[in-house]
Length: 180
Image (cartoon, rainbow, N blue to C red; front, side, top):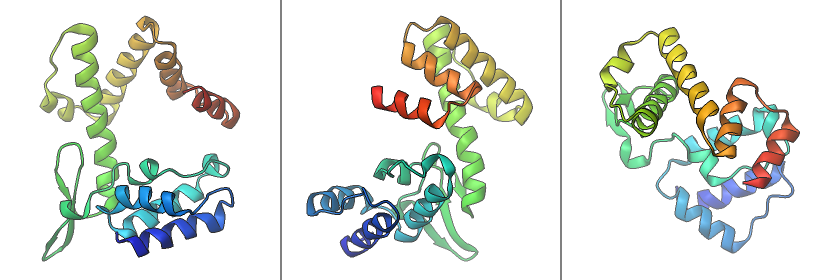
C-alpha cells in the first residue's frame, strides 16, 4: 500500500467514524504499518470490521485490520491465481476463506503448544493436534482453557478466557479494554 492509498483508506474510515482523525502524524504512523500490505485486502478488512455490530462504536486500529493478512511479499502469482500464506506456518492458500479457517486452527494449535509447555512442561506434537477432528480439537482446547482459567493468578487472563465461554456485553468488553 502506498501513501496515497493509506490516505484514501483513512479518509474512507473517517467517512463512517467521525471521531477517527486523519492528521499527518496518523497518516505516517498508519503508512509505516500498512506499506507492506495490499490496499484491497486491508479495505476488505475495514468493510468486514464495519459490518460487525460489536464494532459500531469502536474505532478500527491498524493492528485489528492487518491481523492475519498476508503481506504483499507473502503473495505469489501462480497460474491458478494468487497464493496467500498463513502468517503462523507459512502454508499457501488460494483464497481468504480457506486461509481464515486454517488460521483459526493454526493459531489455536500454537497457543495449545505454548500453554502446554508453560503449565505442564509438556511438548505436544503439532501433527497430532492437526490430526484431530474439529470436535476433538475443540474439546481439548476448551479443557485447556478451563484449566488455565481455574489455575492462573492473572485476573486479566482469567477474564479473557472467561469471555470465550461467556461472551461479554459491549459495555463489559469496552470496560475491560479500557482497563488494559
